[in-house]
Amino acid sequence: MEIAVFALGILVVGWVLLTAIRTVVLPRATHSPLSWGVFGVVVWLFTRIASLRKSYRDQDGVLALIGPVGLLVVPGIWMVLMLGAFTGMFWATDPDLKLRGAFHLAGSSITTLGFAQANGAGQQALAFTCALLGLLLLSLFITYLPSTYSTFQKRERQVTLLDVRAGTPPSAVALLERFYRIGWLDQLDDHWKEWEPWFAELEETHTTNPAIPWFRSSDVDRSWVTAAGTALDAASIWTSSVADLDLRKRVSANLTIRAGFVSLRRIADTFKIRYDPDPLPTDPISIQRSEFDTALDALEAVGVDIVHDRDQAWRDFAGWRVNYDTVLLELAQVLRVPYAAWTSDRSAVAAVGGRFARRP
Image (cartoon, rainbow, N blue to C red; front, side, top):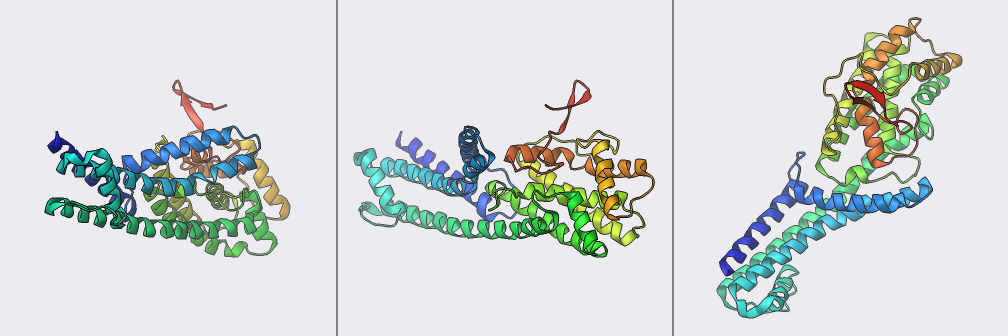
């Protein structure tokens, strides 16, 4: 019995350490059942509480707690499991301790407070190991917390800049209109180049840490999801519908779109969101042709030179949008982001019985 308990304790300790390394140290997206499972419980609890609130602002106040609370709970569970594992191992080395005495000794060791005495060389070695691992987990958590907030701040800088340039809630049409009115259309090439690295960093950070996607903007009307959708739609309208663009200007926008939909798809993978990895340009999207024409009419009204062949413009726009349409709208629903046109104001198009139908 004692041998089995000791072996089980070693397995739990190894599992916790491997989880911590995968979550904090390993520089790649890995699925850790423990971290993601614990965080999933936090998400489930707070989304249920948020559903009881009537206004979106009140819901947002509850949902804003998911990231910070999850960030604290996950390492806390690591420590609890580690404490439980060493309690079992201390008991296995000396059953006379009883569970209470083993817990007392494990707590003294893992917190390095030293208020309980370990007897014998074997127990002392186990106490030293417990203390070292406790300090290791604490050190990982200390690095985990500031790196998460640093990532959040970098992400929000671009979201805030978009708020200035595309309004609140953000709109692709408003972005292009504003650039035209202030005479910055020629500088849109530089604007797209700012978004390409933003999307690349978004993919890296939001797939390796389960808490970061749930960190909501400081302003209730902002969201990284709606910012991403606005940037992608603006680039798609720009490259498909604005007349007399040279190859260089189209390439910058096209690279931004590709960086965007690749990033959103990788993030969608962590949420188990299903999508077509290789859609056809003619596949249906959630945007209606009438909405697209209305957007072009608004741009043309302020003086933007729109291509004459709107049918081809629509085909080109839809051919870009189909690459990120599903993942963008599903992420908006899962994360319950604020209203933004063409992002959180609709549901994704889904295949039903071999045909496509719009979800209610």
